[in-house]
Image (cartoon, rainbow, N blue to C red):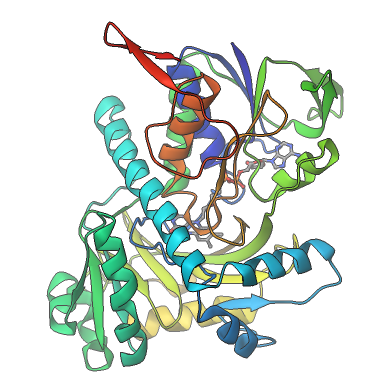
Length: 432
Ligand SMILES: Cc1cc2nc3c(=O)[nH]c(=O)nc-3n(C[C@H](O)[C@H](O)[C@H](O)COP(=O)(O)OP(=O)(O)OC[C@H]3O[C@@H](n4cnc5c(N)ncnc54)[C@H](O)[C@@H]3O)c2cc1C
């Protein structure tokens, strides 16, 4: 079957790879000149199954209200006259009940565990490298109240098979000696040994190179302008290339993986995707003093920042601002991240050479991504991965490739649309 993947970010790249593995003829279309150049460019680097508490949870509404108008708030709603933002906000509130939160954690952990396993298998199979580290993720708390509050979600994650252990401040410092400097302020931590980190952009670019070697065609610098229907199916997509020439691209099936931009392409064909861009920041700086720099990937609960060590670079990322498609760098936020890094790990990084970046997380109100078949039979969705698109990329890519191929996915997850069933004939898996 001929399949066109729309978008060459992490989700488009993994979809293309696994579709090719299923034997399809695959093309990928992206408006950028190189893959993973938008939200998958400089993220926090964490493969964090343990980071499964959704933004929408029972304590969120009060916190979001308190943070309104606070420039360096971890989650900032900039209220706009934008109907999509308001609708998203209402849906977000609906996801804040204890029952919805539990349900969403369950989905996020299941997909995350499957995805991490799929990434590990991929690493073994094709030997892909991307400054990966397999030393776990340590989430540290400077507030006793927040630390006490971490026990219940950690217990739920353990019940779901994600071994997020609650540990003392001393144990946290033993695991990551770079935390010694703030030991007096540490209330405690959680540690998930199976979690990982790595450079998502490097991973995506390496995977794209493997795909190209295996015959996948990448149409870069092509902007998709419309999906066109005929007879209840997508007949073709319209695009313009780098020279502004109009192109009509046809396939048997289409996978929409355009991150935050996905809803804009889907709406004209009657598919409303509850995805809103949530701007995040990252700072990347070279390691200056290795003895002060962390090696384990860390999450700073107080500032909602993640820290990953990517080879000889430090990557610090976080904060979320719901303010439409604006990607401007706000100096207050950039400086707050650098200040916090210096406070935690003085002298570890070379702040003079810091590179700042913003990206738009394709956020759903529940933090659960939208994967599966749309109501248009040959249009498939692999989008809305919000804060966890790197963690969920391999599992989502493999699942959508199986769904497009008529095979049942391998993970129990709330996929959208009708799910294929699979039977085994003489040990070979086939669509039922
Ligand atoms: C600050 C920050 C930190 C993060 N940290 C982590 C982390 O530690 N761990 C984790 O798991 N996740 C993290 N994430 C989330 C993760 O980076 C995203 O979920 C993921 O990159 C989304 O990938 P995507 O492929 O859906 O979107 P994108 O990477 O944005 O890809 C979409 C692609 O579609 C293309 N496109 C869009 N519109 C068009 C069009 N009209 N025509 C053609 N092409 C088009 C774009 O050029 C782009 O390449 C973080 C995100 C941010 C912002």
